[in-house]
Image (cartoon, rainbow, N blue to C red; front, top):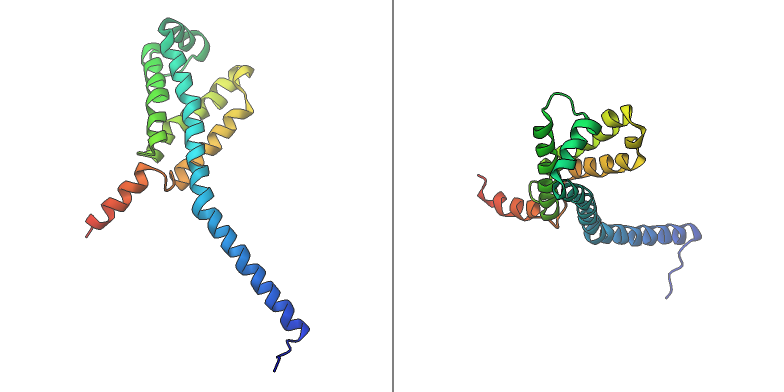
Length: 165
């Protein structure tokens, strides 16, 4: 004997099935695509800063000149500012790529992006660039959301958790 479902019941059943499919698709995206996107963001932003650091160490005299004449970083002596900036540009990307101390690594790069856009950009229109806002948003995402599951931070957190009382 066949059971007939009223039209309104069939519509509710279709909606429930569509919702279940939607839930499965979004869960799959969250499990597979989101970690890959988080990794891609870390790799891209790391590349931006690492290449800048490589440029600075390629000609240290030119770097010192830039910090003295172009950047004019306040508060710090030129050699100290150049050394700190270059160290951050070369060191923090390595941590981002590995996903190790990721949130901490993103903070100095975020600070540098803010200085580039709002301090240098205020005095020199060449540094007022929309791309710096993209850097800031991506770095903020790393600081807020973390590196994702494809990272040493994630592996360490899983290993360290059992050690907690």
